[in-house]
Image (cartoon, rainbow, N blue to C red; front, side, top):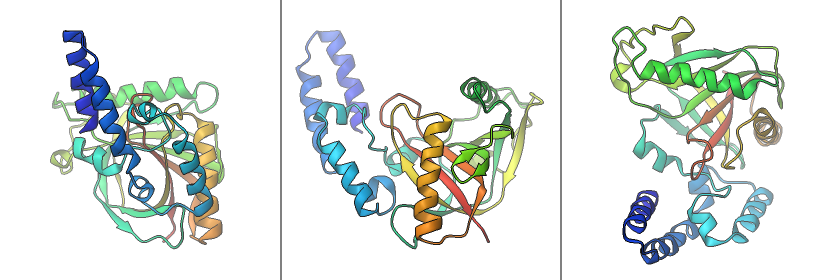
Length: 265
């Protein structure tokens, strides 16, 4: 809601030359952010030391930085899934603080490989994203346009729990909307495929840095997730494969990304 109101106020300001409406709206919206509960934002109870650090940092920033989304407060998942279709999940109770537990139900996704995970990682990620976006824009045998969903899902082979293996092929996925689950249009690009991801229970941690979108950031988060879920809570996770769920457009407004490990059956 507040993001739409801010955009409308910006348009009004540009057309009328008055900036009071924008200033008042930003100030009013600041109270929305101030009242946000960290548990509601993250989807789990943060551990005391980490929560204190987060609150200390966010309490020191100017209110307009908070409103414009230029901070580390992740965008709440509920807000995101009101605007975009999200996969069906079942929330679970975690054993301890610092991470969420949920089951992703079986579903069809459209995917493609990411082969260069070293210095060319960002370039190959962009190329992979473009192939998937072209698929939902009509590069399929039905020439059908498919609505964008979230999250964009990354799959990485890991050398250990905090180190992505640069020599292995990664994968990037878009979730297919419910209306296309039973019979997804076949891709016309041979490097794009439909894959059914079977039901899996995952542990996850959420982060929201505006500029966080590279392997170093992901590896730092994987390390923290492994610490709180596998070491502290003794969850039996598959640390050989790391997953990243990207819910928001990079560097535009509030961000939400999650790192995940699958819990072994």
